Image (cartoon, rainbow, N blue to C red; front, side):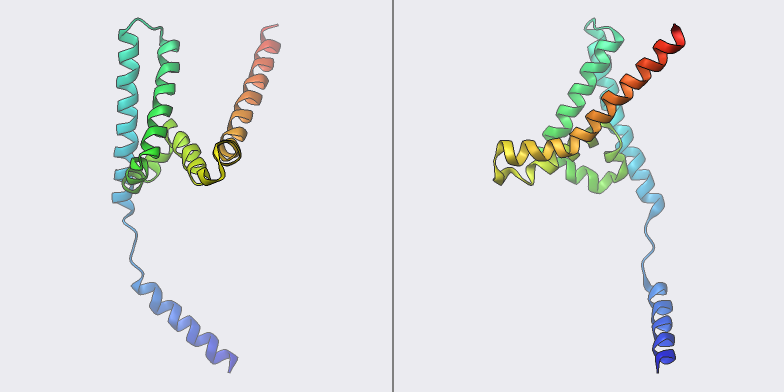
Length: 150
């Protein structure tokens, strides 16, 4: 009895596997490339704008990152970043705007619990480990560089 059930299950799995639609990997990869590339082109245009206004490359880079985080957060708040993510998949998640989207999305889910205990707490749950990792990594890199120079 058990052997028949197992064989029937195997038969069913084999037939079901034939009818599962194949994911459009090539199309999804192209969409991710195009959306991620478009985000990067926009960032480069913003960076060029800041450079043309007389900022140094490091200042322009910082202001570009700030602008891109703001744009990612704004598009998320307006509900547009999710539509972009449906088209671009991982292409929308990789740039810095994806980080802003992650933080704002988590916060928006908890806005009914208030601004401090709801939204701010949820933003820190996502951003806190990233910021902590960045600070600790910078300290370690600084110490290693200081040791190598001295």
